[in-house]
Length: 356
Image (cartoon, rainbow, N blue to C red; front, top):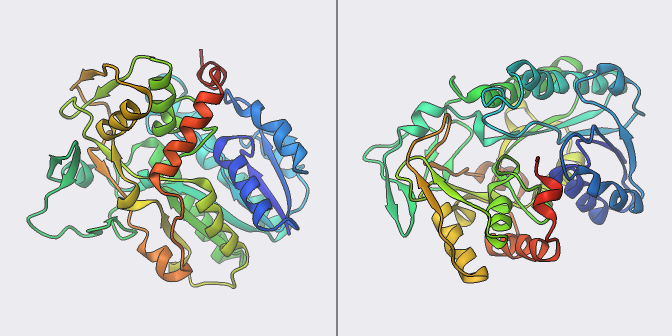
């Protein structure tokens, strides 16, 4: 099967390419990247050695996508992943939408032309901010936990499920991804194309680029090891905010199943994909792990909140478990050990993969 991966030289795209080839060496993987992210060049030679065919193309340019060879499936792993994109002054809001929504449109037009299936990697940040920000929480063992007097729609003991509200505001980033989801599912229905939408928690693992918006777990470990300044931002300024994490190779297991699946009802094609409560950590707990591994250091505190920050966001992936018999295999300790080993073996990683 020939598979096209957008953003293939990014952390997630390259990890998926490797995992899919390991699962089925008969796959023919090709992909494209615009190489604007620091660190993406580091994956080029490794992928070429695996037989991956690479193209230098920009997702925002429809003519670039039109020139790519026909493939049976497209996996969209290209996006600006920052919830602050379009509002932090590093890129314009228009650039964000052109990349995260316009790029999806170009790929869907490609799928329509070549009768290809489409897998969209979406995000937990499509869920509505106000009800998440308003969740009552208390700090227990260094981490926030919800303390609900009454049930909340879409929230289970295992986290936020697919029925949780997605009404605005969700951030410009979340809105662009939510619109991409709707567009992908509509293209699938209108043009009879197989489409899957996977809402991912924080993806983490070795080789993730050295920026907080690329993945807070890898960023924190690399900075801690190099004794770079770190800061707890927002809420109580103590680092109690919580996210879950997932290794891309576990995501690849699900994607492999989806590539081989028969046509499914529309309601079964949108899933949360996450490590869930078993992988959830606060920044303070992550700091304790780093202290045990690398030795202690002081983390600064700034209680002032940033836009769109949340005290607790953990996804419930029970639907994926029920429909696909899918469960993540890589434990959070395994993910952190892997990141630590990579950080120790690559002392230049922050300089290589983070912007100046």
